[in-house]
Length: 140
Image (cartoon, rainbow, N blue to C red; front, side, top):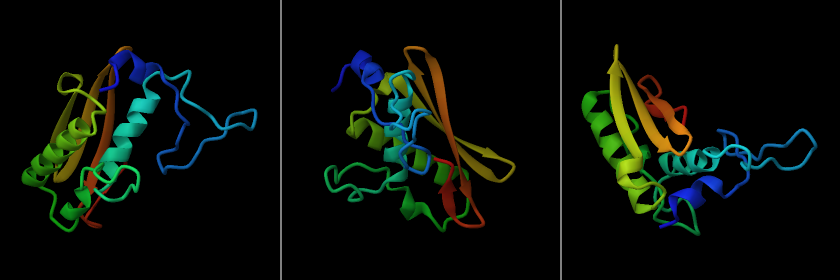
């Protein structure tokens, strides 16, 4: 497993939430060098948004949440999603068990998933929801 220090100090290209490269103010590709947690957050988002087999080079990476689409938002769906995310992040060796927690939250009929990461600079949270009307996860 990559050392904790190296994960937070190795730069990567900066991707938008849609997966596009970000361009710096000078016209170059932006990187994560000045934001220690950005590369890890990007890796977590990649795993959460992928299904196994989506990535040719890493066919086992993915939380496989697409199979939950179509189900009504519920505490049970939240627990299943949280377990899949946890398993996927651990098996991809992106984070160790003591570095993160995945919490499904039902708020007035809406399912929100919060991933809280303990980084060297403090806690960082990634939130996304389950859209019952479209039956899909949004906001990776």
